[in-house]
Image (cartoon, rainbow, N blue to C red; front, side):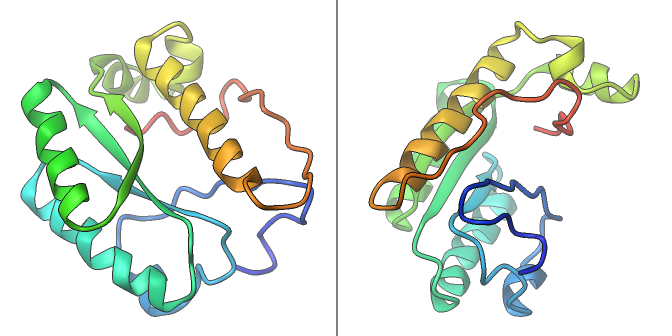
Length: 156
């Protein structure tokens, strides 16, 4: 993956398969940050918890969780409590949105199908937060902060 990762003045975001294989093989060792998508289901949270020590073992210092598919306060509490007990900072909370499923069935990105949705606003805010986190203590990298329509997979 080292040849895919952007140069110092660019940012590359990769949506990888939900699996620990990328960590066990060390294919993510060149990343500046790892975003772990944590959904409010037991197995998803257990996978997130197993991911953290593997990532730290590879020397990845910036590890953040994204609380995903949050439908209500109970879902949010489940992810928040789990991440807190596993020393995992939540960088964003993304709501469940049926528009994602509708867009995916139509073969469209959520950015194109519902650009003004709450979910798109939260993902856009996530991009800004990630840029802030990455710029803390690093050189002045120039990064295009505008999301590209149709570029996101829409999977949430």
